[in-house]
Image (tube, rainbow, N blue to C red; front, side, top):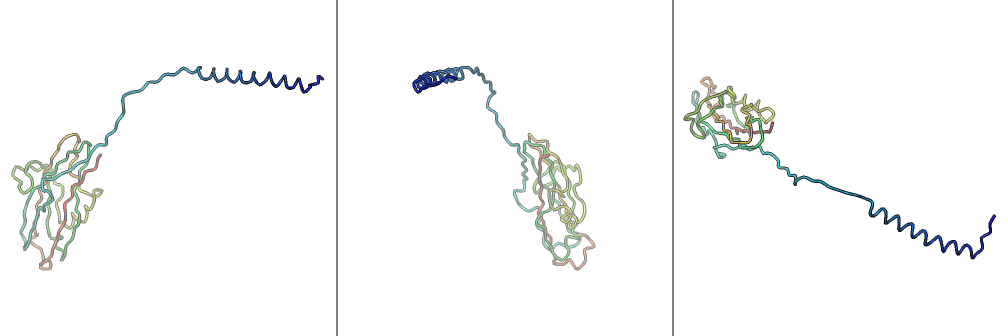
Length: 196
């Protein structure tokens, strides 16, 4: 077995150290310049959400303000509802903030028709296409209280302006009892669209 002297160990260390530095340099040099690369990309991508938009020509005004109604009284008016959203949607009609007293709503007859022509305050030129509701006001406000339970009207296709006119007729039933004297009834009519 060969014997290593202190001098031979120093010589081996002196040789090994520069050799290691040279090898490390070659390794770094090789890895720094050994990779080819290339890229490709398309134009900047972008997103925009679609819209569901409804407006009406009543501008928040009430359709009816009837006081001192008696059996047989009634009235008719129209309102135009317009969809200008970019998405296809389903429009439904329901009641909100319904209230009343003395059971008057049970004796108010309500008919809602959908069609074309006419607008807020006038039904001149109105042409009926379908009946949305025909019954008692209490039946409408009890059954149609949200979009989920709303009465279906029409389905705008999106991407343009679409208008439907609603003719709303009310009357106090001829057989309304004395118990409804002084009674009240009120509700808001709400048209809501949700994308389909």
